[in-house]
Image (cartoon, rainbow, N blue to C red; front, top):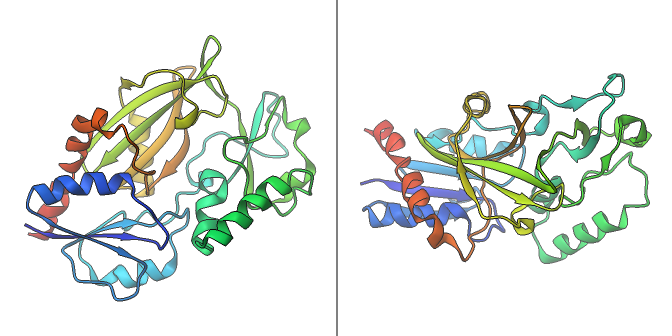
Length: 283
C-alpha cells in the first residue's frame, strides 16, 4: 500500500478528487491532503490538484523531489494551447463568435488563487459585474455564465483584440431543437468516461442543465489533447459539431462535490482504479 498526497492550493474546498480518494483509503492506501507548498510531507504518489490555468512555479520546484506526480507535466492548460477555433482580427471568418478568457472559467480560479480570502472573492465578483460598461482593454476576468456571443467578428469591441487576457473563438454549439448540449470527458490514468447533457442556455453549465446525463463515447481527438497537455487526471469539456469534436475547456482540478454522487458510484469506482498505473511506477 502507498502513501498518497493530494496537494491543493489554499482555499480549496471539497472536490471530486476527495470522493475518489475515499476509495483509495478503503483499498488500504493512506491518503493525506495538504494545502500549499510549505512543510510538504513525504509521499509515494502526489496528486497535483492546483486550481489555476498556469501552474505556479513554486509547485514545480517543490515537487521535483517526488518521483511520481500526477499531472506534473500539465503546467499550461490555457485555451490558447488547445483551441482550434481561435478567430483573429485579420481572419475572414463570417460566422458567430464568442469572447472568452484564455484562462479557465472566466479567469475566476486564477484570481481566487491570487487572493483566496472572502473579501478577495467579493471584490472579484464586484469587479466582474462592475466592468460591463468599462473598457475591454484590460479586463482579465469575465462572467463564465455569460460570455458574450456575437453575430460576427465585426461586432467584437476593439479593446478585445488588444487584450492579451481575452480571445475570440468561433461559436460552434451542439444543438438539438431549442437545446444546447455540452459533453465532458473525465479521466484518471487509464480510466475514463464521457457524458453529455443539455440546457436552454447557449453557455451550458451543470447548474443550467435541463436534461438527464447520458453516456457517450470518447473521441480520439480528446485523447490527443490529453497527451499534448500531459494530463493524467482531469476533465475536458467539448461538443460534437458537424461530426467533429470541438474542445472548449480543460481542467486539472475538477469541481466541488455534489449531493448526487451516489448516481456516479460506478464511474467513481472506475476512476479510482486509475491510481494503479502510478502505484506500479513506485515499484
